Length: 379
Ligand SMILES: Nc1ncnc2c1ncn2[C@@H]1O[C@H](COP(=O)(O)OP(=O)(O)OP(=O)(O)O)[C@@H](O)[C@H]1O
Ligand SMILES: [Mg+2]
Image (cartoon, rainbow, N blue to C red):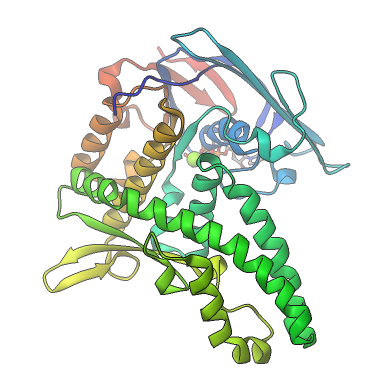
């Protein structure tokens, strides 16, 4: 955890974003703690910052919803800086709801493809809704995997895009009862993209299961938890397996059922992550048997692993955005999470409804108050 900090946000400018008609803030390099009542705009601010990382809402909201009520367009602009080298980066995003048009620039240049502009800054968001990563459906965990790996593993995003397109076509052919020869060409394409995705997922899980267990143990102060890859082709889950071969064999095995049901039954769209904690008689799935706090701790551990993934991929630390997560953890867990985050270099932007939740960096963070979309320095 001794990698240098990466980019820090120095300025953020919002126009017509959620409850912000206009906002111009200058962040100190170490970060800021933003305190404000429910509904004041804390999550909206975090959402705007992270928009510059993935050009989508981290809470899964459609772009239209991000336009301030009554406005048709929003703009977000961030100026980021590397505190060591002085290198700076400007990322902007704008969305026009009437034209359904998104425009992104990186240092003033419109990227050829949006995919090429993703993850330029390096940020990780911790949010209360992360508990859904543990308690929610497999699709939430797949979305998590896809975002983390798309931002940090070269070629992953392109493989996901190829996979989605091929899956759609192949499912349509299965529904139509297309001849075997026609289907086969799409199966080959599907297997190629799927194998790349599944191999990357298997590698990521096997490289990070130890760290996940350690983070869970450290924050939770209980026995380690387990992270495993529940691959829809079990033979493909262990690294080193020929994933394409295993998936091809599995698709042949279920070919008849696929035709009957008109859908592709094996592949990355059927994968899951297993999250379990040690119980008296063996492993207990946290989705079914975790307490609220244990589920939140596992979610935090996943985010810490995500931060480590960013560090490994870029050799620099990500910006950490903590949206009101301490109220959800018991005081011991909050304290240990804060300690862990304090050990990590990088800017921290943290929000909370009450100041007592904010004893981070021993009070080093500048404190701001927020109310109705306006930010002022705290007295
Ligand atoms: N498109 C929009 N236009 C204008 N206001 C919006 C829009 N979308 C959400 N809001 C409002 O923005 C306000 C702030 O929302 P936000 O989620 O940021 O609050 P918060 O400070 O995080 O509150 P909490 O502490 O309850 O999490 C809410 O009152 C919400 O209704
Ligand atoms: Mg909020």
